Length: 567
Image (cartoon, rainbow, N blue to C red; front, side, top):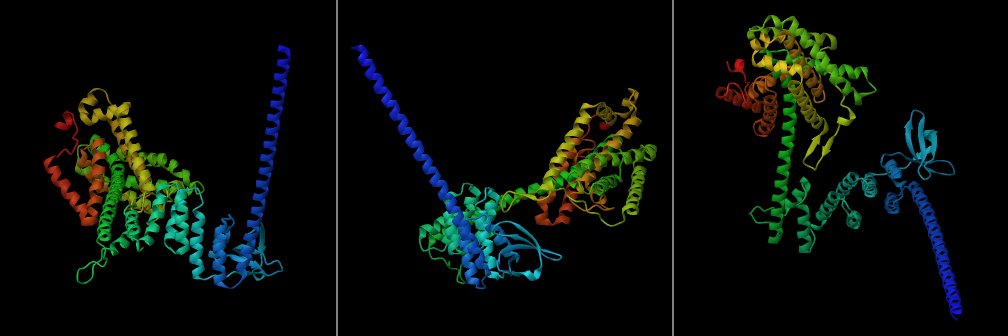
């Protein structure tokens, strides 16, 4: 009995397993058929789009501009990747069709003997053809305006949010019924917050004049988070008054909302303008620090008033120019060669100046001032003889070109941003040299008490030569940085020599931290005073402040310590 029951259960399980396999096979077959149908449908749809695109492109050969506008709209809706080439070629007057029987449409580039053609529907390069064998497709200004908007709509489909943001701004310049509808369609699909804000602001420009009060208030709210001047101008129209002093806008709620939005925008703009000024102040301060930090070493250790320091900066800038002449095909890496080269050239010139002239004039500051001033004139004339008196332009590497746009108000230029970082790097390296090396220990010893250092066996003459060479080398490195901000000329150093002495005296003679803090402080002070006093008066005010400050603290912000310094 038990045996029969086991056989029945086994048969039932076998039937059940067969049923499951059958259902799975059927399901798999159905899904495979469904996928084949879907793939086939997609292929058919793709072929239909391709055929439609080609037919639409061929309609550009007609002379009716209104018809061409409708064709542009239809091609834009297709979202075909080939549309960009067609629109860009048409916008730039480079769309042609052949005069033969085929009358194919081409994108052409001008060559000495005709045009180099590309078939816009197949992407095939046709090669060079004679000008008489093709006819240019004509457009007018209305079509150009429409093409720019259509290209912007195509840009809204790319992954890069920066491109989409520019596309929204471009579309916002030509708002009409179609573009407004397009923006309302893409708004729910947009994932980037900045692009969404820009879309809302563009739509708000339309909704600002709607009949519905809530829609108008929402539009004002959308514009309140922007900083573009055109939006602020549009909001100010809502709070305009007539000659009798009455508001042109009738609804008080709109007036209050617009007033609050204007205050928010102007407050935000003011904040970012101050940040922009802060950045310019830091970049100017960084240049001053680079220019003065070498002087702080030589002046602090040796007590030499080196009026040729500016010309050592100039030599570093000219070294950068020469390196680029030697590496015309490698501009992007030439700066990395120019930095050590400028340090070596200016450093060697510094050692020659110290060994040849200054070592005979220690203890006579007035004579060193006159001697180094004479050397500065000699170096200027040497550069004029070798390179001519004309300014030379140094090419900025591609990785330092351009700017980092934070928003419509705050833009950070990359060359100045790199110079701020480069200044910090040079400062830290120099600080490590003076704190962690034997040369640094001997420099500190000589700067604090020269007689005691000499009595302890330190070769002060060697220290003087190396210190002057180090300070001069840093001046050459400063010249490399300055070459990225201005033209290189024989008078480059004269621009920064006075500022360098101001930084050294204000910060404390021989103190690196003092040079850093005073340089950045003077740069910031200059830039924050310039909007109110002008560039020249701002410098005069800073100079007056330093004179008054030195009257109170003759040794500067961070005076040297040691018996010699205190004496």
